[in-house]
Length: 398
Ligand code: MEV
Image (cartoon, rainbow, N blue to C red; front, side):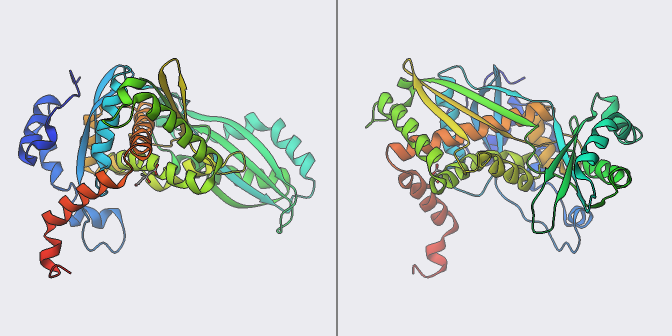
């Protein structure tokens, strides 16, 4: 338990001082601290992927100030973009003024798809699949004993018809499966591959694709915050104006896909940074989030912001398929450290923390955009970075 995630002046310390302070506050071991040097070796990389020739490091930072469901947290972030960490820390501080983030999540149910072609009687096949649902699900009983022991396993089987496609009509079967603390890609892929021959026999069709869907809309997390408008003020702009501006900016992103893409990119600045730090498949998370943003046929903002009773209310809900067992969390010491900093959450809790990070990042971006604009903060940090790397010196000041 961290007593307080407030760390005033943390940014002014040296890296060694920050590590020292963090290790005291979060009770880190020598081994934890060693993992901050990059985490994996070239030999580890060789085990993880084919043709490895080395490893590639990125900054690992923490954003202080978070309160999520009453719990004080340091947010671990892996990101190369200047100003994201500072912006997130600042937004978390603003949200603190309203008591922090409140979050929730659904059961961690993944979707696996089986594509059936050349089904001679699609409507009859749908009826047969539905009638044989329990029997079909029981064929998966021998798979994934750990997931089952922990209360997960297959939940449902659903069938959809894609009547008119250039490849003819198709039946699409969805297997819904609670994968508990695993992200679940392997578990669901094994399950749909096991089911496919059974479905071929029942439907007299041909199974082609058997793969998870990254639109994991049965596995969603949400976060909300309620900020007194006074906490939003800047030296030049009143809190009321900032709150109203954030509402108007959000409506713009709801109504216009060109703006929505940038708006949601800002959300993913937060979510991806935590995903990378904690060893998640961030491509899966991105794919799911963007597909969900277009769920009514138009690509829209993932967030909602409105002003009510002198408060700014924010809400973000989206699919978040994450795991705290298996995958990189098993092999990457820095990912394990990031999870330790988050108080070793289970997968649902991690998804809730990540969606709060996304909402915080969106708040920071919108507040900057409706006041001084993004460039002032960005450019100051960019210049700092350029001077640290002595870029001007290197290219002769061109
Ligand atoms: C930059 O990485 C992200 C922003 O463009 C997001 C936004 O415009 O909302 C600042």
